[in-house]
Length: 423
Image (cartoon, rainbow, N blue to C red; front, top):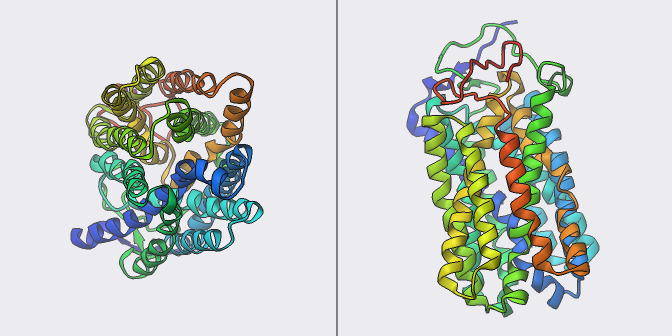
C-alpha cells in the first residue's frame, strides 16, 4: 500500500517552531496541573476539611489515570493519529480542572484527579512523540529538555502566585489551570502537523519517506524478548524517579510549614530556588545529553541524593537551604531527556509507546505519598522523607545499566533498536 506522506523537512522551520511552541503551551499546563496538588495540599486539609491521607490518595488516583492515559493514548495515537488525540486530551485537562473547582468534595476531586491523570499521562506520551519528530536527532535532547524545564517553571509560577494571592486566595492557583489548556487545544487544530499526512524524523537525519504502509505498534512487541528488558527497566527507572520526588518534593510545603515553621513568603523562596535549579538543570542536562550521550545524565540523580542529605541537616537558614535546594533541582532534572531517550530505545513504530513508559512507571509509585504519611505518623515526616535520597541513588544505578542510544555518546556501544537488543 502506498504511503502518501510528506516528510517533516519539507515544512518550513518557522511553521515547525510554531507547532512546537503550541505544544509547549499545553505542556506547561500539563506540568502545572500535575504538580498543583502537592502545592495546595495543606490548604485542602485546612479549608476543605480533607485529611492528609485523603490528599495523599489524590496522587494515587492521578497516577492511576496517568498510567491509563500513557498506555491507552499511546495506542490511540499510533492507530488514530497523534494530533487528534493530543487535541482531545488537552481539552480534557482544562475542562476537568474547571469541574474540580466547581464541586470541591473529596469524591468528585478523586474522580476528577483520575480523569485529569488520564489526560496528563496521555499528553506527555503524545506530545513528546510529536515533538521529537519535528526536528533532527542532533537537537533532540534540547527539544525535550526545553519542554521538561516547563515543570520547574510552572512550580516557580505557582510559588510566586501563592505569595501574591496569599493563603486566603490559594484557590486562584487552581483556577488558573483550567482555561488556558482549552485555548491551547484550539490552537493545535491550526498549527500542529497532522501525523497521518506528515512523517517525522526518526533516529537518523534521513528525509526518506517509506513507500510501504506504516507498521503499527503493539504492546506485545514492547514486551517481546527483544525489548522486554528495556521496557521494564524504563518503567522501573521512571517509577523510582516519581517515588523519590514524592518522598521529598511531594511534601515539601508541609515540611517547610510544619517542621521548619516557615511562612508562605519564605516557602515561596525555597520552592522557587529548587525549581530554578530544575530550570537551569534542564538546559544543562539537555546540552550534556546531546554532546556526551543520554546515560551521562544518570549522575544527576547522585547529585540530588547528596543535596537531600544536606537539606535535612542544614541549619534554619534560608540562604543555605536555597543553595542546597537549587542544586537538588539541578540534579533532579537530569531526567528531562527521558522523553526522547525512551523513544530512541525502540523502533519508529513503537515511539509513542516508548514515550508512554515515563508515566507507565507510576504503577511503582502509586502509594508513595501514602507511605510517607504512614511512616510520618509512626515516626516523623522528616524520617519518612529520608527515603528520597536512597531512592534516587538506586535510580541512578539502574539508569547506568540501560543502553546508550546517542551514536556520539561516551557510553555508546553500537545499540540499534532495529537490530537484536543489546546492552
